[in-house]
Length: 460
Ligand code: ATP
Image (cartoon, rainbow, N blue to C red; front, side, top):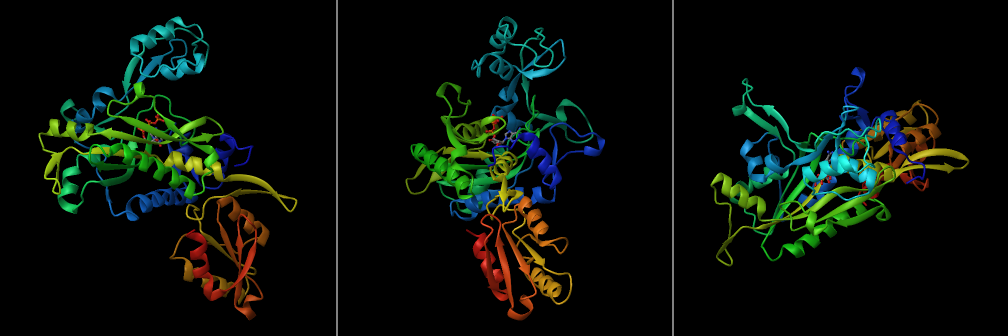
Protein backbone atom coordinates (compact mmCIF):
# COMPACT_ATOMS: atom_id res chain seq x y z
CA UNK A 1 0.00 0.00 0.00
CA UNK A 2 1.27 3.46 -0.77
CA UNK A 3 1.68 5.79 2.23
CA UNK A 4 -0.33 8.53 0.57
CA UNK A 5 -3.55 6.62 0.10
CA UNK A 6 -6.50 8.52 1.51
CA UNK A 7 -10.22 7.92 1.27
CA UNK A 8 -10.60 10.83 -1.17
CA UNK A 9 -7.95 9.34 -3.39
CA UNK A 10 -9.57 5.90 -3.41
CA UNK A 11 -13.04 7.34 -4.06
CA UNK A 12 -11.76 9.48 -6.96
CA UNK A 13 -9.76 6.57 -8.34
CA UNK A 14 -12.75 4.22 -8.15
CA UNK A 15 -14.88 6.68 -10.08
CA UNK A 16 -12.24 7.55 -12.68
CA UNK A 17 -11.48 3.93 -13.51
CA UNK A 18 -15.04 2.65 -13.31
CA UNK A 19 -14.85 0.63 -10.11
CA UNK A 20 -17.53 2.37 -8.02
CA UNK A 21 -19.91 5.26 -8.72
CA UNK A 22 -22.22 7.18 -6.42
CA UNK A 23 -25.73 5.84 -7.00
CA UNK A 24 -28.15 8.11 -8.93
CA UNK A 25 -25.35 10.58 -9.49
CA UNK A 26 -27.13 12.54 -12.23
CA UNK A 27 -29.81 13.40 -9.64
CA UNK A 28 -27.28 14.56 -7.11
CA UNK A 29 -26.64 11.10 -5.69
CA UNK A 30 -28.25 9.30 -2.79
CA UNK A 31 -26.36 8.92 0.43
CA UNK A 32 -24.83 5.57 1.18
CA UNK A 33 -25.79 3.90 -2.10
CA UNK A 34 -23.16 2.91 -4.61
CA UNK A 35 -23.07 1.28 -8.03
CA UNK A 36 -20.30 -0.99 -9.23
CA UNK A 37 -18.88 -0.11 -12.65
CA UNK A 38 -17.31 -2.36 -15.28
CA UNK A 39 -14.08 -2.99 -13.34
CA UNK A 40 -15.74 -2.94 -9.91
CA UNK A 41 -18.25 -5.64 -10.74
CA UNK A 42 -15.48 -7.91 -12.03
CA UNK A 43 -13.46 -7.41 -8.84
CA UNK A 44 -16.46 -7.97 -6.57
CA UNK A 45 -17.52 -11.06 -8.50
CA UNK A 46 -14.01 -12.44 -8.21
CA UNK A 47 -14.02 -11.88 -4.44
CA UNK A 48 -17.35 -13.68 -4.13
CA UNK A 49 -16.19 -16.41 -6.49
CA UNK A 50 -12.99 -17.01 -4.52
CA UNK A 51 -14.99 -17.22 -1.30
CA UNK A 52 -17.42 -19.69 -2.87
CA UNK A 53 -14.65 -21.74 -4.45
CA UNK A 54 -12.78 -22.11 -1.20
CA UNK A 55 -15.76 -22.38 1.17
CA UNK A 56 -18.04 -24.57 -0.96
CA UNK A 57 -16.38 -26.15 -4.01
CA UNK A 58 -13.11 -27.13 -2.40
CA UNK A 59 -14.84 -28.82 0.55
CA UNK A 60 -16.99 -31.89 0.57
CA UNK A 61 -18.75 -30.84 3.79
CA UNK A 62 -20.31 -27.55 2.64
CA UNK A 63 -23.27 -26.99 0.31
CA UNK A 64 -24.77 -23.78 -1.07
CA UNK A 65 -28.12 -22.04 -0.78
CA UNK A 66 -29.86 -18.94 -2.12
CA UNK A 67 -32.82 -17.98 0.03
CA UNK A 68 -35.31 -15.14 -0.44
CA UNK A 69 -34.64 -11.61 0.80
CA UNK A 70 -38.20 -11.25 2.09
CA UNK A 71 -39.09 -13.96 4.59
CA UNK A 72 -41.95 -14.66 6.97
CA UNK A 73 -41.97 -11.92 9.63
CA UNK A 74 -41.95 -14.61 12.32
CA UNK A 75 -38.40 -15.49 11.29
CA UNK A 76 -37.25 -12.16 12.73
CA UNK A 77 -39.23 -12.61 15.92
CA UNK A 78 -37.62 -15.99 16.48
CA UNK A 79 -34.12 -14.74 15.67
CA UNK A 80 -34.47 -11.81 18.06
CA UNK A 81 -34.12 -9.13 15.38
CA UNK A 82 -37.56 -7.58 15.90
CA UNK A 83 -36.85 -7.01 19.57
CA UNK A 84 -33.13 -6.41 19.71
CA UNK A 85 -31.60 -5.50 16.36
CA UNK A 86 -31.24 -1.91 17.49
CA UNK A 87 -28.72 0.88 17.57
CA UNK A 88 -28.92 3.67 20.12
CA UNK A 89 -30.22 6.83 18.46
CA UNK A 90 -29.92 10.38 19.76
CA UNK A 91 -31.04 13.60 18.11
CA UNK A 92 -29.32 16.92 18.50
CA UNK A 93 -32.02 19.55 18.90
CA UNK A 94 -29.76 22.34 17.66
CA UNK A 95 -28.75 20.85 14.30
CA UNK A 96 -31.61 18.34 14.02
CA UNK A 97 -29.04 15.69 13.15
CA UNK A 98 -29.28 12.13 14.34
CA UNK A 99 -26.36 10.17 15.69
CA UNK A 100 -25.52 6.83 17.16
CA UNK A 101 -25.24 7.70 20.84
CA UNK A 102 -22.48 5.16 21.49
CA UNK A 103 -20.34 6.54 18.63
CA UNK A 104 -20.89 10.13 19.79
CA UNK A 105 -19.85 9.36 23.36
CA UNK A 106 -16.92 7.17 22.39
CA UNK A 107 -15.54 9.77 19.96
CA UNK A 108 -15.82 12.58 22.55
CA UNK A 109 -14.70 10.78 25.70
CA UNK A 110 -12.95 7.57 24.70
CA UNK A 111 -15.36 5.75 27.03
CA UNK A 112 -16.47 2.29 25.96
CA UNK A 113 -20.25 2.37 26.33
CA UNK A 114 -21.29 -0.67 24.31
CA UNK A 115 -24.11 -2.55 25.98
CA UNK A 116 -25.30 0.36 28.16
CA UNK A 117 -29.04 0.97 28.42
CA UNK A 118 -30.79 3.93 26.71
CA UNK A 119 -31.25 5.54 30.14
CA UNK A 120 -27.56 5.24 31.00
CA UNK A 121 -26.59 6.67 27.60
CA UNK A 122 -29.06 9.56 27.99
CA UNK A 123 -27.49 10.42 31.33
CA UNK A 124 -23.97 10.51 29.85
CA UNK A 125 -25.02 12.51 26.79
CA UNK A 126 -26.72 15.10 28.98
CA UNK A 127 -24.21 15.27 31.84
CA UNK A 128 -20.80 14.83 30.25
CA UNK A 129 -19.80 18.23 28.88
CA UNK A 130 -17.35 16.70 26.47
CA UNK A 131 -20.19 15.24 24.39
CA UNK A 132 -21.10 17.81 21.74
CA UNK A 133 -22.91 17.85 18.43
CA UNK A 134 -20.03 17.48 15.93
CA UNK A 135 -21.80 19.83 13.51
CA UNK A 136 -22.54 22.88 15.68
CA UNK A 137 -21.08 22.08 19.12
CA UNK A 138 -24.61 22.08 20.61
CA UNK A 139 -25.40 20.21 23.83
CA UNK A 140 -29.17 19.97 23.62
CA UNK A 141 -29.87 16.29 23.07
CA UNK A 142 -33.06 14.26 22.95
CA UNK A 143 -33.43 11.10 25.00
CA UNK A 144 -31.49 8.16 23.66
CA UNK A 145 -33.79 5.51 22.25
CA UNK A 146 -33.29 2.16 20.57
CA UNK A 147 -33.78 2.32 16.81
CA UNK A 148 -34.52 -0.90 14.92
CA UNK A 149 -32.31 -1.27 11.87
CA UNK A 150 -34.59 -3.49 9.81
CA UNK A 151 -36.04 -2.03 6.59
CA UNK A 152 -39.79 -2.36 6.55
CA UNK A 153 -41.92 -2.97 3.51
CA UNK A 154 -45.41 -4.23 2.65
CA UNK A 155 -46.22 -7.37 0.71
CA UNK A 156 -49.09 -6.95 -1.72
CA UNK A 157 -51.40 -4.02 -2.41
CA UNK A 158 -52.60 -3.37 1.14
CA UNK A 159 -50.33 -1.32 3.36
CA UNK A 160 -51.59 -2.63 6.67
CA UNK A 161 -49.81 -4.13 9.67
CA UNK A 162 -50.92 -7.59 8.56
CA UNK A 163 -48.80 -7.18 5.41
CA UNK A 164 -45.71 -5.78 7.10
CA UNK A 165 -42.54 -7.53 6.01
CA UNK A 166 -38.81 -6.89 6.28
CA UNK A 167 -35.85 -6.87 3.95
CA UNK A 168 -33.46 -9.32 5.57
CA UNK A 169 -30.75 -7.73 7.73
CA UNK A 170 -28.55 -10.83 7.41
CA UNK A 171 -28.44 -13.86 5.15
CA UNK A 172 -27.90 -16.31 8.03
CA UNK A 173 -31.55 -16.76 8.99
CA UNK A 174 -32.40 -18.03 5.49
CA UNK A 175 -29.97 -20.83 6.19
CA UNK A 176 -31.38 -21.76 9.61
CA UNK A 177 -34.94 -21.96 8.35
CA UNK A 178 -33.79 -24.27 5.55
CA UNK A 179 -31.75 -26.52 7.83
CA UNK A 180 -34.30 -29.31 7.66
CA UNK A 181 -34.81 -29.00 3.90
CA UNK A 182 -31.11 -29.26 3.19
CA UNK A 183 -30.65 -32.12 5.65
CA UNK A 184 -33.45 -34.11 4.07
CA UNK A 185 -32.48 -33.48 0.47
CA UNK A 186 -28.70 -33.48 0.25
CA UNK A 187 -27.39 -36.35 2.39
CA UNK A 188 -25.21 -34.10 4.51
CA UNK A 189 -24.00 -35.33 7.89
CA UNK A 190 -22.85 -33.27 10.88
CA UNK A 191 -20.31 -31.68 10.74
CA UNK A 192 -21.42 -29.80 7.63
CA UNK A 193 -22.01 -26.27 6.45
CA UNK A 194 -24.51 -24.29 4.37
CA UNK A 195 -23.18 -21.24 2.56
CA UNK A 196 -24.98 -18.27 1.10
CA UNK A 197 -24.16 -14.98 -0.59
CA UNK A 198 -26.57 -12.15 -1.22
CA UNK A 199 -27.93 -8.73 -0.39
CA UNK A 200 -28.76 -7.63 3.12
CA UNK A 201 -30.29 -4.36 4.27
CA UNK A 202 -29.78 -2.34 7.44
CA UNK A 203 -31.14 1.09 8.05
CA UNK A 204 -27.85 2.27 9.53
CA UNK A 205 -28.13 5.56 11.44
CA UNK A 206 -24.73 6.72 10.26
CA UNK A 207 -23.59 4.97 7.11
CA UNK A 208 -20.29 6.14 5.73
CA UNK A 209 -16.72 5.60 4.69
CA UNK A 210 -17.71 4.90 1.11
CA UNK A 211 -18.62 1.21 0.62
CA UNK A 212 -17.50 0.28 4.15
CA UNK A 213 -20.90 0.87 5.71
CA UNK A 214 -23.97 1.22 3.50
CA UNK A 215 -27.66 0.52 3.99
CA UNK A 216 -27.79 -1.99 1.17
CA UNK A 217 -24.85 -4.36 1.01
CA UNK A 218 -23.86 -7.94 0.35
CA UNK A 219 -22.93 -10.69 2.73
CA UNK A 220 -21.15 -14.02 2.41
CA UNK A 221 -22.14 -16.22 5.31
CA UNK A 222 -21.70 -19.86 6.16
CA UNK A 223 -23.34 -21.74 9.00
CA UNK A 224 -21.28 -24.77 9.96
CA UNK A 225 -23.24 -27.28 12.06
CA UNK A 226 -21.22 -29.34 14.54
CA UNK A 227 -21.75 -31.70 17.44
CA UNK A 228 -21.86 -29.83 20.78
CA UNK A 229 -18.53 -30.30 22.49
CA UNK A 230 -16.61 -30.07 19.22
CA UNK A 231 -17.64 -26.45 18.66
CA UNK A 232 -14.59 -24.78 20.20
CA UNK A 233 -12.22 -26.74 18.02
CA UNK A 234 -14.24 -26.03 14.88
CA UNK A 235 -14.35 -22.37 15.81
CA UNK A 236 -10.54 -22.25 15.89
CA UNK A 237 -10.46 -24.08 12.57
CA UNK A 238 -12.68 -21.54 10.83
CA UNK A 239 -10.86 -18.54 12.29
CA UNK A 240 -7.62 -19.96 10.86
CA UNK A 241 -9.23 -20.89 7.56
CA UNK A 242 -10.73 -17.47 7.02
CA UNK A 243 -7.46 -15.73 7.94
CA UNK A 244 -5.65 -17.86 5.38
CA UNK A 245 -8.17 -16.97 2.70
CA UNK A 246 -7.23 -13.28 2.97
CA UNK A 247 -3.49 -13.86 3.03
CA UNK A 248 -3.60 -16.41 0.21
CA UNK A 249 -5.19 -13.71 -1.93
CA UNK A 250 -2.36 -11.35 -1.15
CA UNK A 251 -3.73 -9.14 1.64
CA UNK A 252 -0.76 -7.94 3.68
CA UNK A 253 -0.85 -9.82 7.04
CA UNK A 254 0.68 -6.71 8.65
CA UNK A 255 -2.65 -4.99 8.03
CA UNK A 256 -4.72 -7.84 9.45
CA UNK A 257 -5.44 -8.79 13.04
CA UNK A 258 -7.83 -10.84 15.11
CA UNK A 259 -10.09 -9.12 17.59
CA UNK A 260 -11.55 -11.18 20.41
CA UNK A 261 -14.92 -9.83 21.56
CA UNK A 262 -14.91 -9.43 25.34
CA UNK A 263 -17.18 -12.01 27.00
CA UNK A 264 -19.48 -9.45 28.58
CA UNK A 265 -20.20 -7.79 25.22
CA UNK A 266 -21.08 -10.80 23.12
CA UNK A 267 -24.32 -10.81 21.13
CA UNK A 268 -27.20 -12.64 22.76
CA UNK A 269 -26.61 -15.77 20.65
CA UNK A 270 -22.83 -15.96 20.86
CA UNK A 271 -20.50 -18.00 23.05
CA UNK A 272 -17.39 -16.52 21.48
CA UNK A 273 -16.79 -14.16 18.54
CA UNK A 274 -13.51 -13.30 16.84
CA UNK A 275 -13.37 -10.62 14.17
CA UNK A 276 -10.82 -10.39 11.41
CA UNK A 277 -9.93 -6.72 11.18
CA UNK A 278 -8.12 -4.65 8.58
CA UNK A 279 -6.14 -1.53 9.32
CA UNK A 280 -7.75 0.99 6.98
CA UNK A 281 -5.54 4.10 6.68
CA UNK A 282 -8.57 6.36 7.06
CA UNK A 283 -10.35 4.66 9.98
CA UNK A 284 -7.92 2.32 11.69
CA UNK A 285 -8.67 -1.26 12.65
CA UNK A 286 -12.13 -2.21 11.43
CA UNK A 287 -14.08 -5.43 11.08
CA UNK A 288 -13.99 -7.26 7.76
CA UNK A 289 -15.78 -10.29 9.09
CA UNK A 290 -16.92 -11.88 12.30
CA UNK A 291 -16.54 -15.55 13.15
CA UNK A 292 -19.04 -16.47 15.84
CA UNK A 293 -19.89 -19.55 17.83
CA UNK A 294 -23.70 -19.14 17.67
CA UNK A 295 -24.30 -22.25 19.79
CA UNK A 296 -27.68 -23.96 19.23
CA UNK A 297 -29.51 -20.67 19.79
CA UNK A 298 -30.99 -20.12 16.33
CA UNK A 299 -32.13 -23.68 15.62
CA UNK A 300 -33.79 -23.90 19.04
CA UNK A 301 -35.50 -20.54 18.58
CA UNK A 302 -36.86 -21.55 15.18
CA UNK A 303 -37.96 -24.93 16.51
CA UNK A 304 -39.85 -23.20 19.32
CA UNK A 305 -41.47 -20.52 17.15
CA UNK A 306 -42.35 -22.78 14.20
CA UNK A 307 -43.28 -25.92 16.10
CA UNK A 308 -41.00 -27.97 13.82
CA UNK A 309 -38.51 -30.40 15.25
CA UNK A 310 -35.15 -29.17 14.02
CA UNK A 311 -32.98 -31.67 15.88
CA UNK A 312 -30.34 -33.67 14.11
CA UNK A 313 -30.44 -37.45 14.30
CA UNK A 314 -26.99 -38.95 14.50
CA UNK A 315 -27.22 -42.45 13.05
CA UNK A 316 -23.82 -43.55 14.31
CA UNK A 317 -24.59 -42.83 17.98
CA UNK A 318 -28.37 -43.16 17.69
CA UNK A 319 -28.80 -39.77 19.35
CA UNK A 320 -30.79 -36.65 18.67
CA UNK A 321 -29.38 -33.23 19.38
CA UNK A 322 -29.36 -29.59 18.31
CA UNK A 323 -26.06 -28.94 16.53
CA UNK A 324 -23.91 -25.97 17.53
CA UNK A 325 -23.15 -23.48 14.78
CA UNK A 326 -19.90 -21.82 13.77
CA UNK A 327 -20.52 -18.81 11.52
CA UNK A 328 -17.98 -16.94 9.44
CA UNK A 329 -19.90 -13.82 8.29
CA UNK A 330 -18.20 -11.50 5.83
CA UNK A 331 -19.11 -8.62 3.53
CA UNK A 332 -17.70 -8.50 -0.01
CA UNK A 333 -18.14 -4.71 -0.31
CA UNK A 334 -16.01 -4.04 2.75
CA UNK A 335 -13.54 -6.72 1.70
CA UNK A 336 -13.29 -5.14 -1.75
CA UNK A 337 -12.41 -1.80 -0.15
CA UNK A 338 -9.66 -3.52 1.87
CA UNK A 339 -8.23 -5.25 -1.19
CA UNK A 340 -8.33 -1.98 -3.16
CA UNK A 341 -6.58 -0.01 -0.44
CA UNK A 342 -4.01 -2.75 0.08
CA UNK A 343 -3.25 -3.02 -3.64
CA UNK A 344 -3.21 0.70 -4.51
CA UNK A 345 0.37 1.77 -5.13
CA UNK A 346 1.98 4.85 -6.51
CA UNK A 347 5.58 4.28 -7.49
CA UNK A 348 8.37 5.52 -9.69
CA UNK A 349 9.54 3.31 -12.50
CA UNK A 350 12.41 4.43 -14.73
CA UNK A 351 11.93 8.05 -13.71
CA UNK A 352 8.21 7.88 -14.41
CA UNK A 353 5.38 7.91 -11.91
CA UNK A 354 2.88 5.07 -12.19
CA UNK A 355 -0.26 4.07 -10.31
CA UNK A 356 -0.65 0.33 -10.07
CA UNK A 357 -3.20 -1.91 -8.42
CA UNK A 358 -1.23 -4.89 -7.21
CA UNK A 359 -4.22 -7.20 -6.97
CA UNK A 360 -3.78 -10.95 -6.80
CA UNK A 361 -4.28 -12.38 -10.34
CA UNK A 362 -7.30 -14.35 -9.11
CA UNK A 363 -8.97 -11.11 -8.02
CA UNK A 364 -7.85 -8.85 -10.84
CA UNK A 365 -10.87 -7.61 -12.84
CA UNK A 366 -9.10 -8.19 -16.15
CA UNK A 367 -6.70 -11.13 -16.18
CA UNK A 368 -4.78 -10.16 -19.30
CA UNK A 369 -4.68 -7.58 -22.06
CA UNK A 370 -3.71 -8.25 -25.65
CA UNK A 371 -1.89 -5.49 -27.55
CA UNK A 372 -0.98 -5.44 -31.22
CA UNK A 373 2.12 -3.27 -31.59
CA UNK A 374 0.60 -1.93 -34.79
CA UNK A 375 -2.95 -1.54 -36.07
CA UNK A 376 -1.81 -2.88 -39.43
CA UNK A 377 -1.91 -6.36 -40.92
CA UNK A 378 -0.72 -8.97 -40.16
CA UNK A 379 0.14 -7.95 -36.55
CA UNK A 380 -3.41 -6.85 -35.78
CA UNK A 381 -4.95 -10.02 -37.25
CA UNK A 382 -2.66 -12.23 -35.20
CA UNK A 383 -3.45 -10.26 -32.03
CA UNK A 384 -7.18 -10.33 -32.67
CA UNK A 385 -6.99 -14.08 -33.31
CA UNK A 386 -5.21 -14.62 -29.98
CA UNK A 387 -7.76 -12.46 -28.19
CA UNK A 388 -10.69 -14.36 -29.73
CA UNK A 389 -9.13 -17.66 -28.77
CA UNK A 390 -8.65 -16.72 -25.10
CA UNK A 391 -11.64 -14.48 -24.36
CA UNK A 392 -13.96 -17.22 -23.11
CA UNK A 393 -11.51 -18.28 -20.39
CA UNK A 394 -11.68 -15.11 -18.31
CA UNK A 395 -12.06 -11.35 -18.65
CA UNK A 396 -9.65 -10.20 -21.32
CA UNK A 397 -9.05 -6.74 -22.78
CA UNK A 398 -8.01 -5.78 -26.29
CA UNK A 399 -6.30 -2.44 -26.77
CA UNK A 400 -4.74 -1.12 -29.96
CA UNK A 401 -4.83 2.61 -29.26
CA UNK A 402 -2.02 4.84 -28.07
CA UNK A 403 1.60 4.08 -27.40
CA UNK A 404 2.50 0.76 -25.84
CA UNK A 405 3.70 2.62 -22.72
CA UNK A 406 0.31 4.27 -22.28
CA UNK A 407 -1.48 1.00 -22.80
CA UNK A 408 0.66 -0.58 -20.06
CA UNK A 409 -0.11 2.28 -17.67
CA UNK A 410 -3.85 1.93 -18.25
CA UNK A 411 -3.70 -1.77 -17.43
CA UNK A 412 -1.46 -1.19 -14.39
CA UNK A 413 -4.12 1.10 -12.96
CA UNK A 414 -6.83 -1.44 -13.66
CA UNK A 415 -4.78 -4.11 -11.89
CA UNK A 416 -4.36 -6.30 -15.00
CA UNK A 417 -1.53 -8.67 -14.08
CA UNK A 418 -0.39 -9.63 -17.59
CA UNK A 419 -0.10 -7.87 -20.94
CA UNK A 420 0.51 -9.89 -24.07
CA UNK A 421 2.07 -8.00 -26.96
CA UNK A 422 2.11 -9.10 -30.57
CA UNK A 423 4.95 -7.32 -32.38
CA UNK A 424 6.62 -7.35 -35.79
CA UNK A 425 8.86 -10.31 -34.87
CA UNK A 426 5.78 -12.38 -34.09
CA UNK A 427 5.07 -12.56 -37.81
CA UNK A 428 8.33 -14.50 -38.32
CA UNK A 429 8.96 -16.35 -35.05
CA UNK A 430 5.39 -16.95 -33.83
CA UNK A 431 6.33 -15.67 -30.39
CA UNK A 432 4.72 -12.99 -28.22
CA UNK A 433 5.80 -11.09 -25.12
CA UNK A 434 4.09 -11.48 -21.74
CA UNK A 435 4.78 -8.58 -19.40
CA UNK A 436 4.33 -8.92 -15.63
CA UNK A 437 2.55 -5.96 -13.97
CA UNK A 438 4.56 -6.05 -10.74
CA UNK A 439 8.09 -7.09 -11.75
CA UNK A 440 7.83 -5.51 -15.21
CA UNK A 441 9.72 -8.50 -16.51
CA UNK A 442 8.95 -9.66 -20.02
CA UNK A 443 9.12 -13.21 -21.26
CA UNK A 444 8.88 -14.36 -24.82
CA UNK A 445 6.69 -17.41 -25.40
CA UNK A 446 5.39 -19.25 -28.46
CA UNK A 447 1.93 -17.99 -29.36
CA UNK A 448 0.42 -21.47 -29.11
CA UNK A 449 1.51 -21.79 -25.47
CA UNK A 450 0.06 -18.44 -24.27
CA UNK A 451 -3.14 -20.02 -22.99
CA UNK A 452 -1.29 -22.58 -20.91
CA UNK A 453 1.24 -20.05 -19.62
CA UNK A 454 -1.43 -17.53 -18.57
CA UNK A 455 -3.50 -20.25 -16.94
CA UNK A 456 -0.49 -21.15 -14.82
CA UNK A 457 0.34 -17.56 -13.95
CA UNK A 458 -3.24 -16.73 -12.96
CA UNK A 459 -4.04 -19.78 -10.86
CA UNK A 460 -1.19 -19.30 -8.37
P1 ATP B 1 -20.50 -3.45 12.27
O1 ATP B 1 -20.16 -3.62 13.72
O2 ATP B 1 -19.38 -2.89 11.44
O3 ATP B 1 -21.82 -2.77 12.04
P2 ATP B 1 -21.58 -6.06 12.43
O4 ATP B 1 -20.77 -6.66 13.51
O5 ATP B 1 -22.94 -5.57 12.71
O6 ATP B 1 -20.73 -4.92 11.69
P3 ATP B 1 -22.20 -8.52 11.19
O7 ATP B 1 -23.61 -8.50 11.61
O8 ATP B 1 -21.24 -9.41 11.92
O9 ATP B 1 -21.63 -7.04 11.19
O10 ATP B 1 -22.13 -8.79 9.62
C1 ATP B 1 -21.12 -9.54 9.02
C2 ATP B 1 -20.38 -8.74 7.96
O11 ATP B 1 -21.28 -8.09 7.07
C3 ATP B 1 -19.51 -7.59 8.50
O12 ATP B 1 -18.28 -8.07 8.95
C4 ATP B 1 -19.37 -6.71 7.29
O13 ATP B 1 -18.34 -7.20 6.42
C5 ATP B 1 -20.70 -6.88 6.59
N1 ATP B 1 -21.55 -5.73 6.93
C6 ATP B 1 -22.36 -5.59 8.01
N2 ATP B 1 -23.00 -4.41 7.98
C7 ATP B 1 -22.58 -3.78 6.84
C8 ATP B 1 -22.89 -2.52 6.23
N3 ATP B 1 -23.78 -1.68 6.78
N4 ATP B 1 -22.28 -2.20 5.07
C9 ATP B 1 -21.40 -3.06 4.50
N5 ATP B 1 -21.07 -4.25 5.02
C10 ATP B 1 -21.65 -4.62 6.17
